[in-house]
Length: 146
Image 1 (spheres, rainbow, N blue to C red):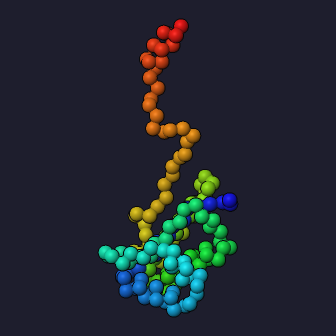
Image 2 (spheres, rainbow, N blue to C red):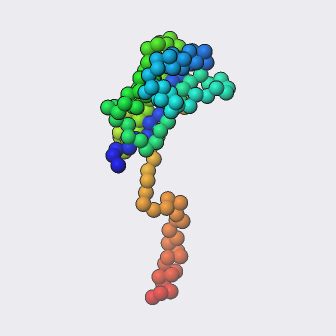
Image 3 (cartoon, rainbow, N blue to C red):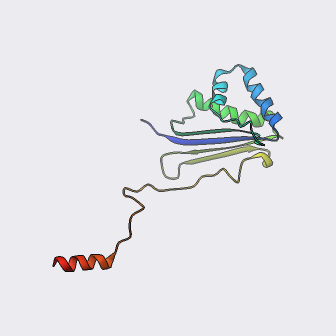
């Protein structure tokens, strides 16, 4: 099965034109790994969003994997090419407690911040929506049984 992660990144651009220019640069490389990484992304064309989004859950995310290298290049290369007009945030949550990788780069105004973050949660071996223990009912029931 292997170690699994939840992974996301957002690449923000100063304008749709800059984002679309970057997409065209990626396509012009002919690099199938980089193009496949882009095809794994959400690129919203409606509204004002000027970003490229990626999310994957329950994936093997090892730095040595070619597809992971391609995704890393996709978000880091954007900042290299557009240092004044681009920023990214990358988050990877592993299976182990505290195994969180958080990376960002680029122009401060474009780094996704307020609406892209981690939070912790808990899994329990019982229904967490249980009815609270009714001590009076319990005492009455045990008294009747005695």
